[in-house]
Image (cartoon, rainbow, N blue to C red; front, side, top):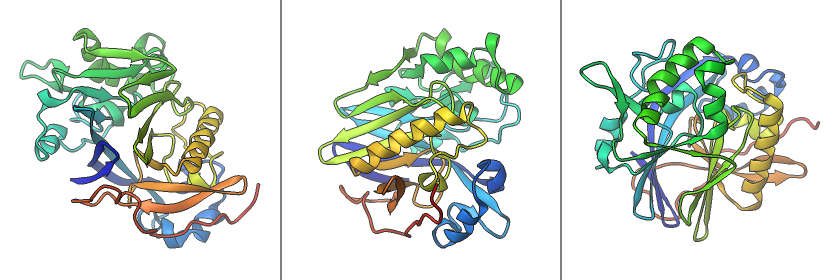
Length: 314
């Protein structure tokens, strides 16, 4: 496992999956292809495979320990059964056990949004074939806009697959009475707070950490690749409302730049997290923060692993 300490909060990364699914032109429609080539020195190989011309995507769960509670942020890819078209992820319970966390130890599960690769281990299948919550004592946080959007009775996005995911990963939580539904903002404790950042999905939530001198923001799929730091107006092909996603992305990046906050996306390869800085009206990579095993407090802000540059102005 790879861990850092941010103020009073411990953060551990658990990786499920690493792939290079799409070329940049498909992943980020409308982006200038010259931008990739001009920034090859730091995009390759962690974020882009230039020979295959594919964007690298990882899938992570984040384990937080805060205010005496054990918190899981996004449960990643679950077992393939019941989730058509989705690859199978790493066994999350086994990964948690390797750092001393049993399913019954988890107090809170935060789903940044309800896409299949973020809710897969919300549940598990019993020997009788029934889907039940993986974490029997946990409260599961779902945003109201995403619950409404992915309700099978009104689905408009990938209706077949999304309905199957909802049935396997969301409905069992609702039936068990373990769901906590929030809207707009939700305060978890004195260091952690959820806020809506709509666009990728209507109810995407970003988790802000403010503890001591440290700041971080777990942005889920608000960013799919660091190229979007340079071009925040460019949304991925997976965003339901690209324009709203771009507005949310610009707002969150501005906050992160102004507060020297660590930006922690769900799908970055390489060092997984990054500090950003303003460059006029634009943003740039300030430095990367690696999740190294045995890190000490404050080590999240490590040495830069490359400098991004903007190659064209709007």
